[in-house]
Length: 191
Length: 191
DNA sequence: GACTTAATATACCGAACGGTATATTATGTT
DNA sequence: AACATAATATACCGTTCGGTATATTAAGTC
Image 1 (cartoon, rainbow over the protein chains, first blue to last red):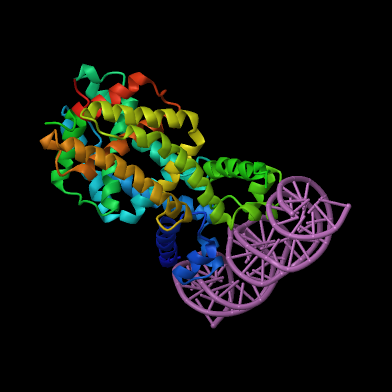
Image 2: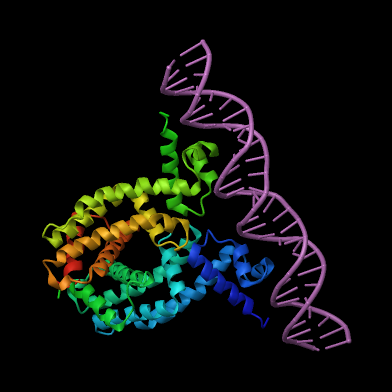
């Protein structure tokens, strides 16, 4: 039972392949061949192909949330909080690029696809985290009130738009960009 | 040659199915059964499953661009132009909801998946249209200069974030929302 | 009406799919 | 050393995959 090595390698290879070509287009056969094992090994660790995906998301989305959650706490300064959140996303994307790209892809994938159904709970947590920040911030900034859901979605949209540029190698995720992005979100593209 | 009827119906069914469960997860068999025909009929009109996808995107993405292109012309007023663009997106999404959802999903899908490769040229056109607007606007607004690509991506991100809320039935696409969204993009969430 | 071609169906192809029954090799326990 | 169980492999299952060879029907042309 000490050799969880193959389990990790299976998850790693599944991440690479799912990210590159999509969950549905990748066969179990490819995953096990990439990992250098055979099918019964995969089915020893996971119930099914879907079980492999669930385990993968639990590992990967868990890693993302572990970095985001501690930053998504409003403590009186909305700009600072949004900066911290964005920095956490940037940090995660840079260290787990494939992982974030896959999650992003699954979030926008067909609503009845297995990938979308598997990612949905983790996406909901992210949205809820952001929404709570705006709810708390509205106590200090009355003009934000009643629009938590929209702001959370809008800010997530901005985050993903910027990260999208990074994934297309059109820019780098610098600390400078954190300030610029939050400033633009808060005050618009002028100024 | 008068009965292009089946061809249209195949495209319609493919759109519904691809949108709902994703290109890779939907078999040719399902598409023809949904359309009430058989496989040779499909292969009479399209070279392959991929050819079906290409034809579908040519029809659907063409419809989208047909609505966007005439609006994406800067004529001295950036706010007005951005509003017109957003209104065009809203209009299209409301009349072709499935179609837009599918395109959005494919834009974020795995980079080596067939869906992503098929949608890429159309996405590039959208991005380029927006970029040109910001390039032209920069002639009047010096502080926008040199950031066309980012602004184009950021605005597309905002557009898709808002549309994402609509697709999740969290809001409706009103004219009021057009003004609010552009205003927020231009001047931030305050004010 | 004869002829051509477009449009469709029946029945099938080899390959890959997700998954498993069975057997074998490690590994940790007593 | 004996034993139990975890971990892995070989070889296979039925099903579905994308695609097609062949035949038939419908439609336009002369």
